[in-house]
Image (cartoon, rainbow, N blue to C red; front, side, top):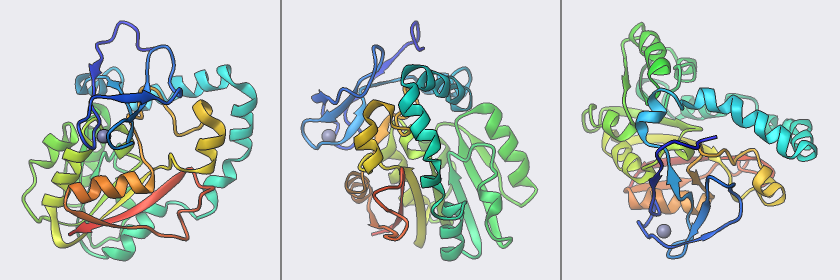
Length: 269
Ligand SMILES: [Zn+2]
């Protein structure tokens, strides 16, 4: 799928270690490794941000990956589809519900906001801002957010977040985003910086520690090559957040082992 593309080698995004063990979950083009120093699971190479901005934006690659998955393991794919109810144990959209509860009013930033729809479901009293690497989606989000007094920056997240002042935000959401981010620790440092001391970031990521991930192996819906570059467990996210100066709490009722995703609430330490 990515042949002919320039790939960038990655060290472990948690500890910058270069040695890893191949987890055997990748394909001919891509390797998911477990860092030998800290255990973090990550894609050992990635496409550069320039590619994400235009021709490999995830909204396009998602369709390609869905097709590939179906072709490769039709039976598992069928089971996966037929058990989609697993995703609906809690009414959607959970991330927005959590954030609405914590932040009924104020400035909110959606990191990796896509076309901006999520943050618009927050309470009326919140002013929406966003950062999005895909050019087309960022333009859509910007138009939406400006009608509510905010705006969206088109840039990789670290660079985009640097355009906002210290302590500007009451809330942040990282909804199905951090698994895509080549530099997740840098982004969390920036999230820490732009949050008020009383602020909170609600994170949703695929749960690499879920039962389904263990059973489905390379056919698990959380594995998307090369779009998902980080494979978080609750433990590895908590560790990365701590490295960025953030404390972590988990909503235990939502984070069931049968759920393909988990949520985390991060606050400045
Ligand atoms: Zn590591």
